[in-house]
Image 1 (spheres, helix red, strand yellow):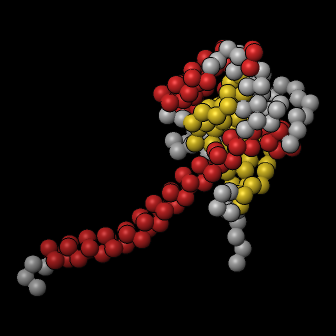
Image 2: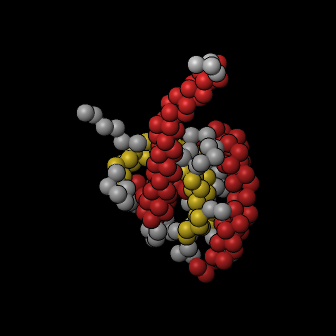
Length: 205
């Protein structure tokens, strides 16, 4: 019997220059490739194995951060099972932009999409403008997970993707359990309703 690996879509969101492409390149290729600003969106596939041994296929979408491409990027949010919302810890304006991005993501994406806030470029500690505490407080307020990374130094790069994708898997697994429960219980409830209606229609027999 053929089995098919689940396919999950992960979208990287954030201002231009926060390191989305570099983070993705390090995760997929294990190195930082020479990059130019993303136009619209770029797609990279990757097969990974989850904590329990399940194999899944992941479609990784790198969206453009420039304002002129913002409306186009929003069309990709609807496809996302998971969202990585990036900002540059050395650029406070990119952190302030996260609130607007988060509002757009929540409006356009599936309500069960898993969202992580990612503070990138932590290797540039002497240039830092956003403290870890600030970011953690924002994430806590918005009920999302926060992780810090450095694409250049390969710090927490694999961890952030692995954690996100495993969380997506758990959400989908819970949905499948709920669907199975409804599938198994509905016929019984229909039988009970049918018996109840039949009894009422024929009270004397």
